[in-house]
Image 1 (cartoon, rainbow, N blue to C red):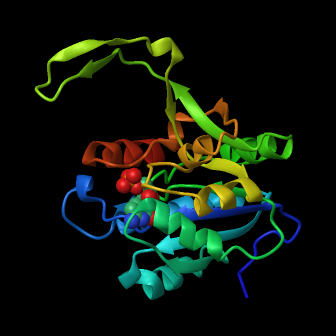
Image 2: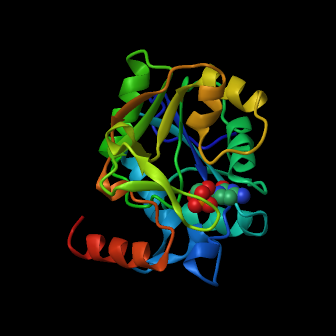
Length: 231
Ligand code: C5P
């Protein structure tokens, strides 16, 4: 039986957490790296479990760490843990296959966005509940963006006013995400990309600076600082 949080909730959250985290430098899989003494995954799951709409959480863990992740999360929240895949997309598909009947809203949330506030989880879920088939949290792009060639010579300047930086959790009607994964071809870096390919409209809601993706050592230092300053 799949572990359950709020039985009245209508949201299942899939947490792909099977990445190696090469860009963080040598060490344990990224989701298990420590932030203020606790693994990133623990921070992420704790915040997801605080969101009232969440009925189920399914984590896709590194294959060699499934039992360890189950033990790690048992005191944090009732979650299901499945083995992840070689690519993020395969990890999401594995977690999706483990969602029990019931929740009709599915959120996909990177473990690496460990400080994502429960309010963003609720905002994305609410937009799906209100009738949007696919919803992503975004922030405006603040830097000037250049397109370059293979030799790092600038080809042109992109109009940043029409660009958005995309975060997770991304939210979907269950049927929409299931069809997109069934039809998936080459791996993409997010789930909304698969849904776009199906011709389904994807809507944006305001993201959060706290939902930063902890990818490089600088991000980890920034996240430590945010936590220490009460973020
Ligand atoms: O590699 P990237 O930073 O895009 O990873 C985003 C998220 O996808 C991370 O939480 C990572 O653990 C997860 N992932 C996964 N399975 C993989 C690769 C990445 O679950 N094979």
